[in-house]
Image (cartoon, rainbow, N blue to C red; front, side, top):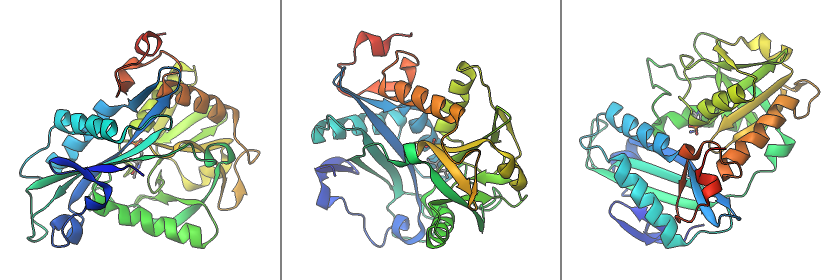
Amino acid sequence: MGQYVFLDDAIVPWDQGRVHVASAAFKFGTAVFEGIRGYWNADDQEMYLFRMEEHMDRLAFSQHFMRYSEILTPEFIRDKTVELIHANGFKGESLHIMTTAYVKDEGGPGARGPVGLAITAQERPRSPRIESGVSAQISSWMRIPDQAMPMRVKCNANYNNGRLATVQAVDDGYDTAILMNAKGKISEGPGMCFFMVRNGQPIAPSTTNDILESITRETVLTLLDEMGCPAIERDVDRSELFAADEAFFCGTAWEVTPITSIDRQAIGKGGVGPITKALQERYFDVCHGITGAHPEWRLPVYGTGSAKANAAE
Ligand code: PMP
């Protein structure tokens, strides 16, 4: 773990990263957050924050939507994140960063501010699940609908919906869950978006299916286009999953993780499908800056990024 965290206005030792039990954030989950990855490139001796600008914009949207009394700006949060990585001196391993804008007030659920900022960064090597894939259970828990708690907003309180699905799936012997929405259509995983491939055609549930407007999902749509294999976005029925040749989850934390079975039925041959595999390779090349493509998606933390990583292919 990192030696330091950022809390409110200062970088402090990890153990001092504490929030008051009377805060609205603690009592009611009045907080919005982003999970962000930093990808290490050994050749460049550089840490690239992946799609930082988009994460910062979404965090600003979440604060606006929750009607915070003050909005912490994208520039402020970006600068504090870079300072925290410098303070910890992270080099050699990729990172997972959690950035939370939370309501400190000790009042009721209508509290709007003052707004605090908490940033943690921890080393996180690639998960073995990227190669092995995961088993998923179609959850009997329904994805919370937009009329109740919009998943489009990355509010901490929303995450108890995915938690219920996850703990049920794990207790039932699966790795994770797929949630359906109130329309009975496939929505997403607890903290990641869903794609399937049917007859060579990638398909993603559209953004009006009670999903987070995921930055990785948008990255994947772009990369699939560039690979000559564009995806379509539409409603997906439960029964279609069992006609899929391939399926995968995507998200900042989940990256591109193959789904090898759903409800114990193998997807395709039960391994990692060819489109998923090619996409994974492209995705990691872009995240780490191994290819020069999409330099606009990588923010170099140490400022040493090579010309290759900063120039289009
Ligand atoms: N859905 C949910 C519910 C999530 O929490 C996440 C993780 N932020 C995702 C999807 C993937 O979103 P992103 O690619 O922006 O990380």
